[in-house]
Image (cartoon, rainbow, N blue to C red; front, top):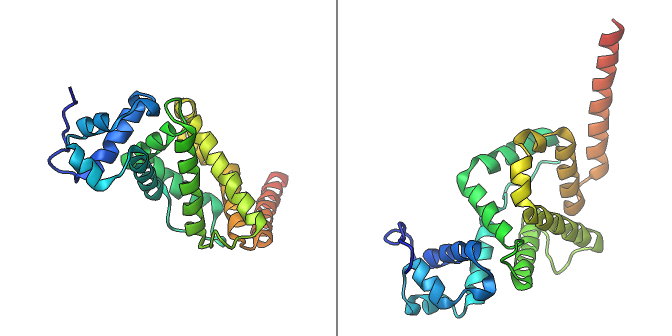
Length: 221
């Protein structure tokens, strides 16, 4: 018997079907999910399913793409801005938003024990495309260095998602807001976007050197 759907009278059928996919993936292996399971969970009929999707893999791709697009920060970091301040703003906004946390939990399922290689590869492909879009780069005409940096970043994201259950229990917000994490995040962005990394690092080193000089002067006094 399907579980009662509190959103069945509000959400469009396509959204209910995608929500059903995530509910089922959290509960069982993807290989054991059927179209019948999905329509029962979503509270729609099979005709509605096949109106929107031709198959279960197409539903999976649609659900994954929707979550990736919704989880991506569209506003690009400012290379001339304060890395720590920008990182703090993004991380705080992400972790304080229940919808964003739900999206992270859903994406983590794709790197979890119920997933398959096909689902993980779909996540990898969509994440790559979203990064290229954010960086305003053409994936068909990108240099090798940038392509490798994007692969490096996507691989890191997948690793974090794979370990999200244990990380969410051990890492606090203050651990993510440290200056070294902020600088690493900004450096990765600059490497992918081909911005002037040397000028960025020079600003950081000059700022830190000035801070150390001021500290030493105060100590000597």
